[in-house]
Image 1: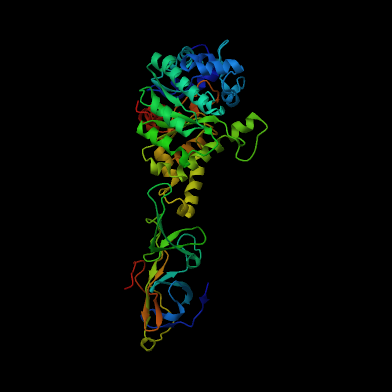
Image 2 (image 1 turned 180 degrees about the vertical axis):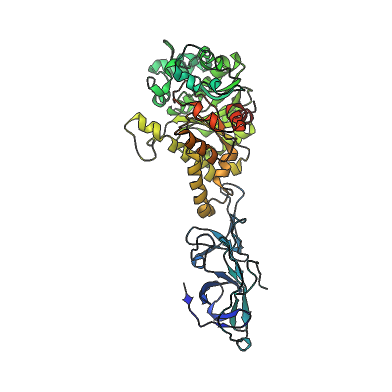
Length: 171
Length: 364
């Protein structure tokens, strides 16, 4: 699994430039260091998702887990796989999280992976700032982090200061 | 009560409970193959006499006639097998313990007979004998259907034949079998059971082509006796993992003679493994222990009681006040003490154990 430690550029709004779009082609992932925290960037058919590389269950390296479709069943022997939904499965204990929402599948009441938006921005629009501020989030024992990712021209931008825990879907 | 020693008094529910008593597990023993001849086609009688065959060996292998566990000393009868007649059951249990209703289970070891037609014929004969000599003669009794457990099609046929008799409230299968009961070859049996609103009973006994333990042949009866709960765990795990309760959501299961103290810890393990492995069994869409609480009830023979306060904690861990049923397991001897259990549970649970859980489960 590719893992990079970049000299991340950050502006005053808590945004970090973490990679070039071309670094994460569809179907691939990249684990990057953002202000001392590891974030997994996933490209699912051109849609970018960021997840903190820490399982809310026991802190496992969530972002190195398998990506699998949703399996549903109406009875013995009935397997229906929905590949339009992608689940990230923690390699330690098999917990499954909906990559789009951070929602845990089997125990939705207790566990949610926090979703960070990932954006792509033009390189010249980024203002480099100082060290990261405290983002004010209060990650609970069973809340992991999904990271907002935006795309600006050629760059993937992770927003570490985004509202904690709110599932965000990229256009 | 008859003149019995203090040992029997310890299991007398009337020492601990004044309310209704429903005994979910009393046994009827077939006195001999001769008893069944009037209930089977003559060809089977001739076949047996011609061979000098005296019936399936399974009952004696499962309950060695002289083993202490096979019958309480007070319940042994002179020149007769324990529990081999309604008069014995009435004298030993129904009358002195003022039992309102009792569920009769007859384990004749039919599963030890590999003959496909003969086994089915014996099952029919046992069921008709139970109707004639037990159900028709004492309105306190209901009973389990005996099934030819090696042959799912024959099992279904027997459920269709007698399943609507008002005295049959359950069909029981021996806990050891060649194949795990959750597997799809048995699903038509569960379909028939739910259609006739019959409980599936899982009961001590049975034979397999393999060793009776999970990993080899024990040398001694005590080993087998103490390890038998493993077979119960394997069968329950199979019913859960194979999605039987998803396919037959109204199926009710009663578990006899397997104990219950192992259920909470083992259930937690099931729950934990399911969290990581549920993708391979997507039809198992709830915590296994929750399904056990919903679909299964356990007789309290044996109680397997350790220190009373520890037993109370285990009962609490079961997580349901509606999961245990009083069963004397007459005439078997577990040497349990109801006083170790009843005083340590709530009034509601005491009532449920002694009558109300079984009343609801069997629609009595």
